[in-house]
Image 1 (tube, rainbow, N blue to C red):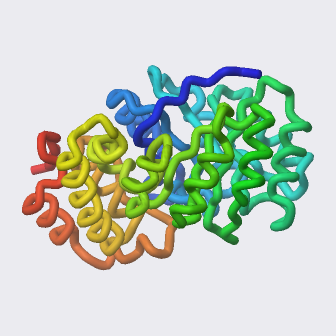
Image 2 (image 1 turned 120 degrees about the vertical axis):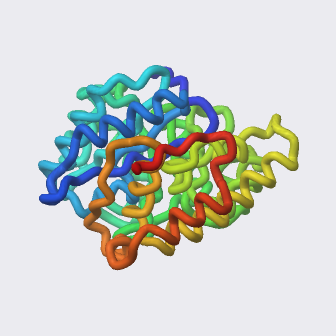
Length: 307
């Protein structure tokens, strides 16, 4: 089976950038990928929920998957959601095509599987349909229907040796802990998706954080994930993240996240197709900017502000 060195830590979701005409802005997507690679993060997830993946058409998803796979990323690993199609056969072909383009892991979003029943069996069938060199991941994508694996199903798919990444979204510590135990001894690395669950998840054996806050504050997220740091450092980072998360979401995510990244020096517009993001365009940015200036959630991290 193919080996994969996927390190513990904070994994951002790669946002999808658009221009003023609502077309893909591939250059901005590449800039975000380069920004994360320069921070030497363990990995990044493309075509996730925050990427507005469900609001892209098939051609746009194809373009994003192909583009990001071809970009330099140093030691950072790339995981890309790829099970598109109405049947398992079609989804397997989609996964293989995206993997062969150069991503490190192709991820199966459970909510896109043909059936809500027998999720573990469908994952096993996809693995059977694909060549042994294709590295697979799992994403408990909350939309359009939130589907979760049981710990027993996690144990079964983990034992196959074909799955290397999982984004877990149950928001239940006992379920998370049981999935960690079920995957023990396998290549499967399980990442927490929920910020409030993160500290307890790391103490339960989680591998890191793959959620919204690593998009804008991966350094702080990495501190919470690092169990070798003093407890007071991790607690302070978690408290800063919780406060910042509430403001960012209230200001219209993911447009607000794109604005924050522009403050960090990226050439990135806030344009978004997500309904929740429209709040951002109904207000000015002063509340978000003032919060950042007042609370300084990026202590020691430089911001670039346009004059």
